Amino acid sequence: MALRAIKHAPITAKEFANMFRQCTPPVGWPRNIGVATSGGPDSSCLLFLIHRYLSEEKSERTQRVFSLTVDHALQPTSAAMAEHCSKFAQRLGVEHVTSKIDWVQPPVSSEPFEAAARAARYQALFNSMTEKDIDTLAFGHHIDDQVETSLLRLSWGSTNLGAAGMKYCRRWGMGWLKDGLSEYGLEGMNRWIVRPLLDVSKDRILATCEANNLQYVVDQTNFQPGITLRNAIRHEIQANARNQPQTPMSMLPQDIVKRLMNLEIVARSLRNVSMSLDSSIEELRTGVRVLSQEARDIDDRVDSVLRSCSISTFPGTFLCSGMALHQVENYDVRRALVLRVLRYVSPNPWGSVNADAGRRRDAISQITKQLWTRMTKKSRIHSFNAGGGVLWSPVVVRG
Image (cartoon, rainbow, N blue to C red; front, side, top):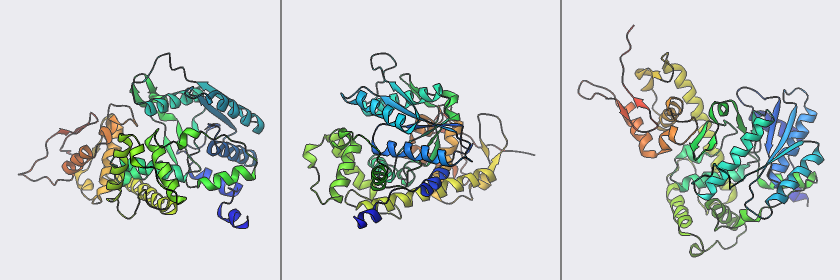
């Protein structure tokens, strides 16, 4: 028991205070904060920790925490899980809101099931935030979720930047404007998503629940590898950690098999880290931490470049100094800079895939190649478009 307590110690109040402050939105904490609760150990632990922190820390601007649950009505147990969330919040003395998705009424998405369910859940959460005047929503994602997200993105051919996974804090965004779902508009630019537990292991979350007698439910569909690619990745990681046989590929859907095989190929191209489905959980956690730190460093460098090269121009456009731009030699910084410009200039909703030129590797590579080709009399750069509805044009600024 002593060894277990040392290895999987509960999260202390002091530790969580540091975690909470680390993900402070750029505009500071609002008066009301929401926690997306599902009834599972992660969100239950987070709601408990935030409520405890705000009860003890009187200097914070935030005064109220809300529990927000979505009854997706896709499982026979979904209503019971939502009721569990309500009772759990009541025991803590936290106000709770449950919203139910009506799959009969429009808008109904034509997206694949997993994407449609996620979009509907986020829309329901956004509506609850509006109802309760909440500007920031906290999710219980942890380091093992981060590992899964990183591997998931690698299976789709992501670069180091994409494999860095989720951020501690990010703007909610304007949505996707597809099928009537996820249309957040300008209001989405004033709201934030935070993930205080992003560097904590699942083991420590479970230890925190046990130490504080927090009751939670377990969604068994999360452990069925044939349902989603994320489930398959999670099952492979856990089987490897427990020295158990992995699921035979013949028992998985072909689209999942294809992605798992692509994951192993793309993972070999990663720089500075070694990550694959055969890696130990500690190796995977270390790898994603390295990638996440690299991504934060690159974001800081992009901020610095933008400050040094930006020139005042008309709204809806971005003008920068070519000389300052060509001083950027790091390829990852170049890609991140292009994505940042696309996101803000594109007429597509901020934060949408379309605003980022579909996040296609070839599109971003084409833009960076054009921008960092030194102009001579023989090789002029002409105006071009490579996605996102953004026209890149060389101009001469006089005066």
